[in-house]
Length: 416
Image 1: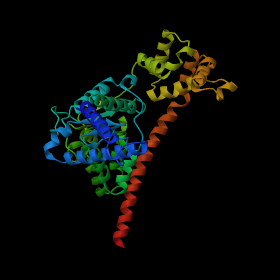
Image 2 (image 1 turned 45 degrees about the vertical axis):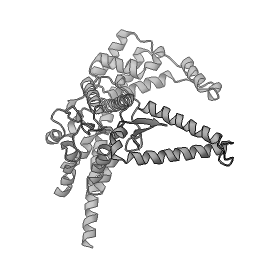
Image 3 (image 1 turned 90 degrees about the vertical axis):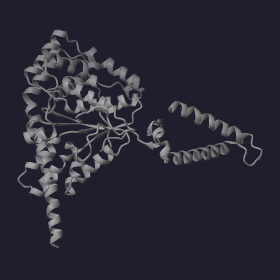
Image 4 (image 1 turned 180 degrees about the horizontal axis):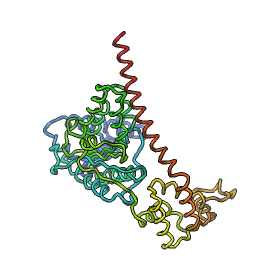
């Protein structure tokens, strides 16, 4: 239908211009670029007004909803623009895809399957022919790849829908969204996000709510009164279907660190959490290091397959995470690309600079990579674990402070 519409509009527009090029009245005849632009503007203004009038006619509702257009990157459901929305903090999803994920295979497969099920939502009937559980919850230690896996599922979902002409968006709930709702002594702002950006969207929606343990851990803080705890508890309505219906139009991915969620809270979110480990074998770590993180630098890594397996086993023996491997491989890349820039580097085009980097980069042997792994195990692993815990506790304190400060201000205002 979209292709036929494009052709019909183009043909009609050309006929319109041809009519005015040969118009009997010289004052209306298209004789220059200015007249041409004015005529085109008038034509599309008239076309838009007519389409808007027809779009409001109930007799054309079915046809309107069946129309899928994309103009200059903006998708339309009928006549309503429904461009892919950015994440709620203005950023975009990470540039990661399912093939980039190492480990977490069960959660990745479940997320992709759920994305396909939601893409089948009937936008006319406002129902999904399949009955689905829209929430996938992942638990895992920091660095196991929760965020990367969820972003990969989000990108897969958007591409899958785009290839099939299904209007779709993917929303990321940020800590700012939570903090703002607490500061207002209500979860209403967060609820509004779901009602407006999810249930109110003329298409299908995926949602990623990272680090949900940060939000719900605040419920157990001793400084909160029952009123604030009830406010937090009201947010569970998002999961049990009382805020927006579980009608198959949307799905949610959410995650938490393993040790920060109590059993009662987990059971309210899901009955079957996925436990993510990320890379879980020596081969997984070889794939992660050699192929994913250092793939563009293989020419400068004279390391045999047997040596790579030994390095992968060193990661297993050291209990390393994917985040730790990211740290280690960044150091390896720094050593590979550690050279003095030739003067020509700073004026050369980008492609020539890349060629110079490849030409002057150094080789790093297996023994040196093993030394970098050992250094990380001795000096940095525990420090990163402490920093992660401190970040979590700081977020919880921030939420609690905002809630109690608002309550104190409200009571002072009431007293005045």
